[in-house]
Amino acid sequence: MRDVRGSSVLLNVSHCRRAHQLIYRNSFDAIHKILRNEGIRGLQKGLFPAILKEGSKNFFRIGMYDPFMTMIHDPKTGSSPPWKRMLAGSMCGVMGAFSCNPFELIKTRLQSQVSAANAHQAVGHQFQYKNSWDAMVKTYASDGLKGLYRGSVLSMARSFVGSGVNLTTYSMMKEYLILKRNWKDDWVLDMVAGLGSGIASCIAMNPIDVVRTRYYNQPYVNGKGTLYSSGTDAIKHIVQHEGPSAFYKGFTTHFLRIGPHFCCAN
Image (cartoon, rainbow, N blue to C red; front, top):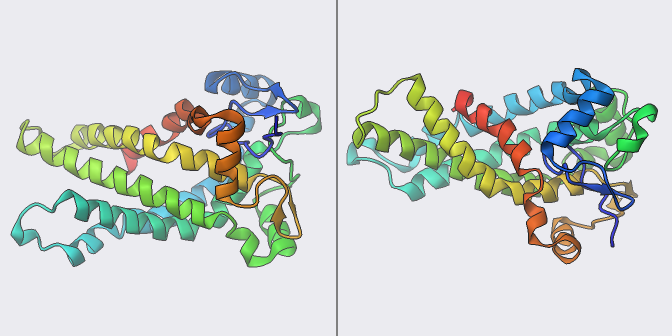
C-alpha cells in the first residue's frame, strides 16, 4: 500500500495512516488525542494564518457577490435564476481562493506539525516551521512565489464549487423561507440558511479538500512533490489505494468547522 503521508490536517483527513498505522480513528478521536497530548494550543495551531486566510478570502467571496450579481442581473426583472447565483458565487470564490492560497498552505502545514515528544501522532510531512512568518520565509526561499501558490488551482476549484453551492443555497433558502413560509428576515433566518448552505458546501468541497491537503503537505524536492506530482495524480492514487470513500475522510470535522462559520459569516 502506498504511504499516504500527504494527508495531514485534522480538519480534513483525520483518518490518515502513517507507516500503515492508524493514528486517528475518527474526527472526535483526533480531537481527544490532540487535547490529551498537546492541550488547547494543539487545537489552535495555524490560527494566525487561518485569520489572514478568512479575511482575504471573504473580501472577495462575500464582498464581491452583490456587485457581481448587479453586473449580470437587473433586479427590476425579478428574482435572479439559480445559474446566475451559482456563477456569481463561483467567480467570487475563485478570486478569494487565489488571494488566500499562501495562508491556506501555511496553515495546513503548521496544523500537522507536532513536537518531538508527540512524534508518535505525527501525520503528513513535518516541515518544522517555527511560526507563520518562518513558514512564509522558508517556503519563499526554497520555492519562490510559485511555492506559496502551490495547489492554488485546487483551491480555486474547491472555492468555485463550494462558494457557488454555498451562496446559491443560502440565497435560495432565504428567498423560499421568506416568500413561501413567511419567515421574518432576521438573524434566525440567516443562521438557518447559513447552516443549510454549509451542509451543501461541505458535501461539495470535501473531496477537493482531501486532495488539496495531501498535495499541500507532502515533501518537495526541487519544486516537485515526492508523493503526488499533481492534483490529478493525487486523485488517481487515492482511488487506487483507498477507494472513493476516502474523499469523504474528515467530513464530520470539516462540517464542524464550516457549519458554524457559514451560520455567522453569510
